[in-house]
Length: 206
Image 1: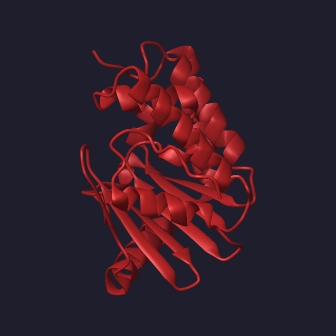
Image 2: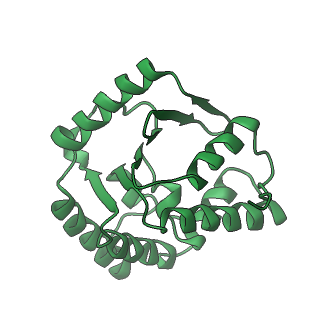
Image 3: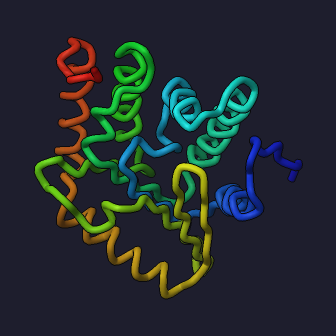
């Protein structure tokens, strides 16, 4: 396998995580709980705005977006399952100077939801506080090879602690089953937001 050109600021922990992604099999599971649109289902334009929001500039943004696209290619090999749960506020946060980025992002989410290896769910704002609301996390499982990835604005942590994985897996399943909308209802909500972004009805700041 050819060496990968990692984007700037890639730690050894993240490099190991990316290596796991490359080694996906039919028994691989990717489960992610996040407030904003998760990276693997972002359009390039949305991803660019995310990098800029985190103070990346110039070539660092270009490399970051390109590498994210590479990771999406690994996902679209169709090996394993990918389950993303995002909060409704992530559909309302504007990325870019106009609504075009968000319209395209909502349209892309609707397209991805039709793929058999991707499940998308939305936690509605009406649900209130939910388990895991104070921290995003990603769970990766390939047979008995487990990973937990947590991140903040300028930090990442990856662990293979099985007990910690089991705790967060139980939390993820509770959120998906009891707090988030069904995939069908989530798709309907995403469609509504796409229309709202197109018409300009989504409240923006200021």
